[in-house]
Amino acid sequence: MTASAPPPASPVAPALTHVVLAGVLGWGTAMVGGPVVAASSLGGWGAVGIALATTAAVAALLATAMDRVAGPGRRGRSGSVLRGGVLGVLGTVSVAAGGYWALQADVGDSVPVPLVVAAAALPFAALAALQWPGVVRTATSVLLVAGAAAVVVPAGQRAQEEDLAERITTEVGTTEHPWVSDLDGYENVMPQHTGSPLIWTPLEAGSGRPEEQLLLFRDQAVDPAGADPCAAPFVRTPSGEQPVTSCTQVRDGVVLRSAVDGQELVRSDDDVRIGVIGGPQIPLTVLEDALENARPMTDDEYATWLDEGMTPGW
Image 1 (cartoon, rainbow, N blue to C red):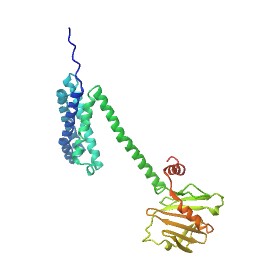
Image 2 (image 1 turned 180 degrees about the vertical axis):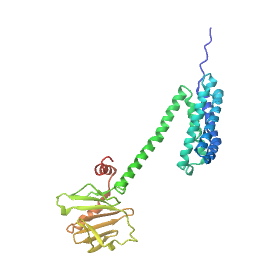
Image 3 (image 1 turned 30 degrees about the horizontal axis):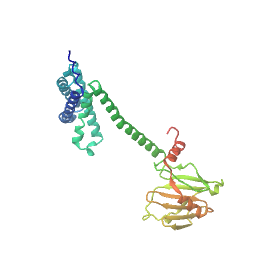
Image 4 (image 1 turned 135 degrees about the vertical axis):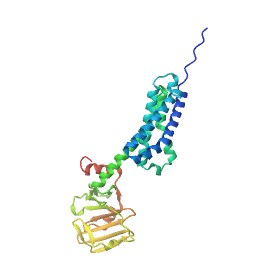
């Protein structure tokens, strides 16, 4: 009776050994080659290129020897020189690119230097794992794709958000949400930006009568201890700025300033100054209700305002 042949040995164990040794090679390349490349920068980009090429060549030689001793070459696969060259050169280039990015981003200010250096093992380890066919290569590919997505997608979203914020600041003058008021009998109209933190929101009366229109505004906060609201010589009215005829503190933090053709009720919060303006015939209770019900736009309302009120194409 013929004995059955033993099952083929799993490639996972030798692959893990190769991967670990490749990681050690990456760490050693960063520890030894990093200072050499950094010192060569004093001689210009030509010297940096020579130092980097020398480091990559040494890493490739060591990776080739490692492939024959503990890598796929030991299992009879040909191509140790090619695999070692790919591992040494691409690994060194990846580590150099990562080190340059870390310097530009000042990563060392928030991440310990030993941890940054240890990260140099990852490109070498990943490249070594990809050289093993089957489950090792498949698992490594999945991890690389998932890791890249976890980094690239949030980075892309942050870049888009920063770009949008910059463009909004350029056109509107602030990224703060305009304010609206949930006031019975009135409808909020498209807020009007001024290229500054001051944003107006007209409130049209349900009656349609222009003299009953209100203007809600949000502006930068002022220090109540250093600024007397009654000291301002003018009050904004629907027909423009007019001299103040009276100024009354309605309650703590709320001031009514009046002019011949209008009145302004203002409240100063810690981080914003909110006010509502109306004609002289508008009852104070209406102004108080408008101010009491004033709130920042929700995110959905803000997105709609940007879509409808910004320059086309933004």
